[in-house]
Image (cartoon, rainbow, N blue to C red; front, side):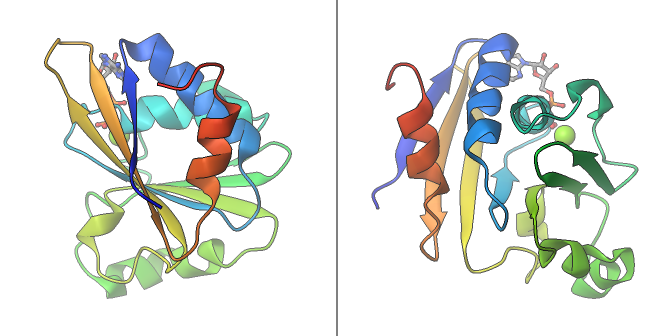
Length: 160
Ligand SMILES: Nc1ncnc2c1ncn2[C@@H]1O[C@H](COP(=O)(O)OP(=O)(O)O)[C@@H](O)[C@H]1O
Ligand SMILES: [Mg+2]
């Protein structure tokens, strides 16, 4: 699949995009969020949590917690690997048990930082800022046969 691109004009639009993504999320899906601090990874996660039927207020940046789980129609594991350095660090958190859990999906910030953190089948989402202060661009890259990007884009009210 060629890469797809989405645009957000502000935090509320990112929330709405996240809600649409959460609504089509299925057990076994893995989302790797790639982008600098403030790109909107956690903001998108808030929408995804709402889209799976969890409480978006439970979503804070897990930079310190590393791992959080929200319960909706499926379990959504939200991780932030910013403070971790090695695959050994990651093993110690129980991360790999969660990634393999049935009836759960994962959304991981800074996953690209640790080799092995991203499973073969994943949606890579690259977030970039600008040019306006509230503009964000999302590049969707499907890996290993992940169909999540197509499901997501098909669920959006208007193709962008
Ligand atoms: N279009 C947008 N989408 C997401 N966040 C935006 C947008 N425009 C401005 N922002 C702001 O950028 C910041 C994104 O923060 P956050 O989601 O925590 O980023 P990250 O998790 O990537 O470090 C928030 O303060 C949010 O209000
Ligand atoms: Mg964050």
